[in-house]
Image (cartoon, rainbow, N blue to C red; front, side):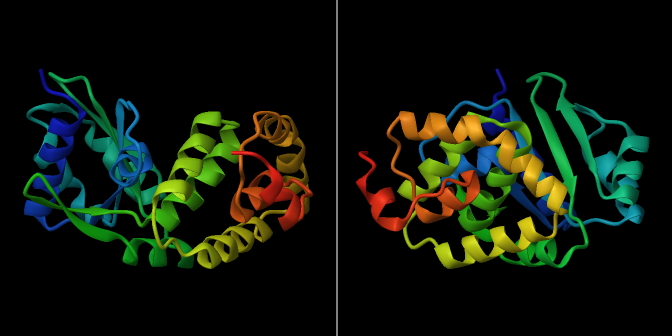
Length: 222
């Protein structure tokens, strides 16, 4: 039976063979950095143009469900298209890299590592944390919060200053109304975190909006 890692190997090998720049992100990427958790989806950011539509379709059409029009539209609008492996029923979300300055820098900052003899490109842990913070804000997902907490705990030499500055920069680009709405929506989740006696670091405090100073934060039991 083909599983997620088998599909990941298939996809990465084909992208590499076609010379298509990519980076693995999402929960699969988190599994490379911290305690693995089960996930059925694979998220990959790609740097492609509309002229690459035929190449992408030809790479996957024979053993994946893939729609050529979806590929073309996603590239044109800088959105997402997906393919599904016919045998393994594993979905791969291809995220077209946006043209914002941050997304360009994030893509350049991706890391290379060897996985079972295969060279792969994966998002940096700092950028993965930032992405998961914003996904959690939009979805109120406690699973995303757990991923962030595990990354903060297990990844050594994280650039916390980079995470905090980028997070605040991205937040300030939202309207005042959006920031206010996000703050109210996170109130219950923030309280749950404290009740659960989770030790939070300064970056996560920025995320959930708790009004605790450093001394109070350090007194929260692990």
